[in-house]
Amino acid sequence: MKIGPIEFTEEDIRAAFKILGEAWKRLRVPKNKKDKVGIIIALKIEDDKDKKNLK
Image 1 (tube, one colour):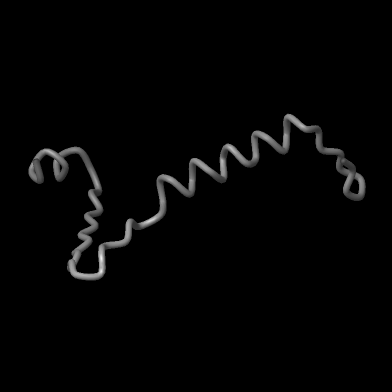
Image 2: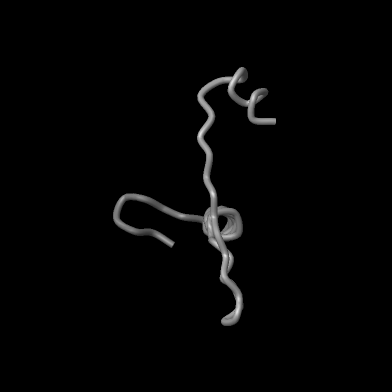
């Protein structure tokens, strides 16, 4: 498939879908059931010393 000056092969398109699928699996936030409450906590660690203290 050619879009303007760029040509994509079937392999390129498959690779793009694999990357998008993997990103979807890793980045989506799971939904809770209607009768449950969920809490998400995110921590950002600056260096290995902080990571060790957190553990």
